[in-house]
Length: 461
Ligand SMILES: Cc1cc2nc3c(=O)[nH]c(=O)nc-3n(C[C@H](O)[C@H](O)[C@H](O)COP(=O)(O)OP(=O)(O)OC[C@H]3O[C@@H](n4cnc5c(N)ncnc54)[C@H](O)[C@@H]3O)c2cc1C
Image 1: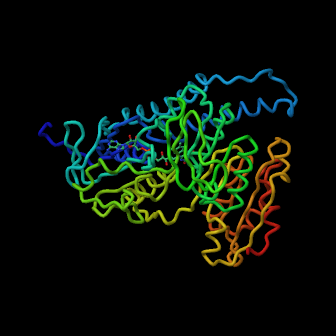
Image 2 (image 1 turned 180 degrees about the horizontal axis):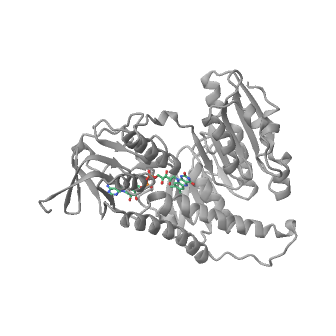
Image 3 (image 1 turned 30 degrees about the vertical axis):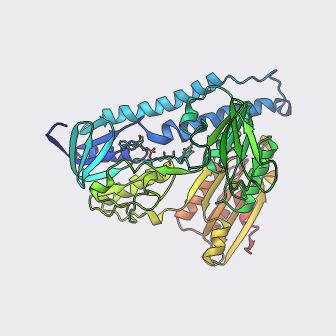
């Protein structure tokens, strides 16, 4: 290790969704900043998360619609999937984004880019390769990775994760996906549409257990209608090598006790990349799952060290990580008083049709004790959905009976990932739902039905 210590105004560890814009904020303010990355620039979203999966979702959607050609009045002949091309398209999208982040950082005046594994040596010192860096402000944006639980057979059988999935350029014959939540279900539908047999194995009694039951049930119906096998209540999951493939033991209440496939994907949650960061040397506290403990403004217990993005356990999305950056940067540079607790839960499940969610679930509304009104409307009655031939799902909105503010919504249906923002923005404005009712929306859109649905509110039970 070289003895000289390099001083910066700020050090950023990780180039996920919060690190690069934070580097730009410091650099633009004329401050010196070092940003350290041990893997690919852009982190999970760009390389193994959102960008590649949504590119695959697009391929799967195009193939799915081609298969429905007769309904729309065209024929394509035999639709054949070229997995190498599907992968090449995905890789190109990820590579462009990753290179964009790298070029942006390398082109930044005042910014030093260092590739390597960063470790704290003290609360204001970070070591990377053979360099010692020091700064009064350090931002941790190290993200997370797939959780690999200790289950029987896990060390004997090859399995895939969202990261190794990125190298797949063939179609698994029978793909077993362990985990019926957001990541698992997106891959399940993608690969089913591309042509694999797919079985989803879920420990819980229903898919996406954090959602309301009606949402879980509809998602299950949508996936089963496409021929995806779903095995719930798989209490004790194990892996075993079988005939060149893999047998997944289930111990379910119903159905055979195992399912045999050719490949298995583990999609059973994420863990933060915090165990090899030397956090103990800095005195930074983590919780029992390894997430860095932060306050409402994302400061750790050590003054001058912040944790942003998935590693702080306060969000698990690209938009929450970017929002973390905005909160910290506005507090530092604009003397603003932004807080994490000000943000409203919002996310999407990018199956087709997508699920857009904002605010509370029904279960959360019930728990909150608010006096509420609710309305639910099937997508089959939405003109735009009928015109598009995509009528699965529903729209559900819950409002506070007294304040008239929107408490939460689920839009499972065509355009749900976009339409949800109509409601989300009204929630941020703290405006009553009547604003949406009085707005003139464009015809024909899914959004134009929101006023109609809000006109059908009934007491929430
Ligand atoms: C399959 C999948 C699909 C997803 N789809 C979506 C989606 O559609 N929409 C959405 O909002 N979210 C999605 N997510 C979640 C989203 O990808 C993450 O929430 C987001 O990328 C979090 O970013 P981050 O800023 O916390 O860190 P990350 O993007 O994880 O980046 C952290 C970076 O830090 C680097 N690093 C770690 N430790 C060190 C160290 N010690 N030294 C140097 N560098 C280090 C890593 O190499 C990495 O590049 C998806 C996730 C997965 C797995």
